[in-house]
Image: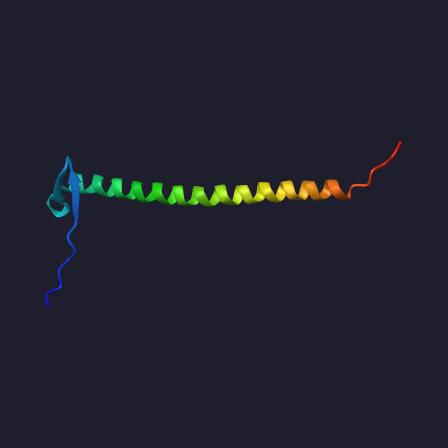
Length: 77
């Protein structure tokens, strides 16, 4: 069986285009777009992690505050 290189296509204005047929300039900008899409996806993934961690820290803070309020001695005047 013959080993074929996977086909690499991009859609431009609704037309499927073989990337190898693009000019060097078009290939360069196609790679820039792909890289930016990947960076955006990674940033969104990391933002979701940060939001979850922040929520956990806020919840832990509130729990700690409530626990401290329970054990504080009441001083009568």
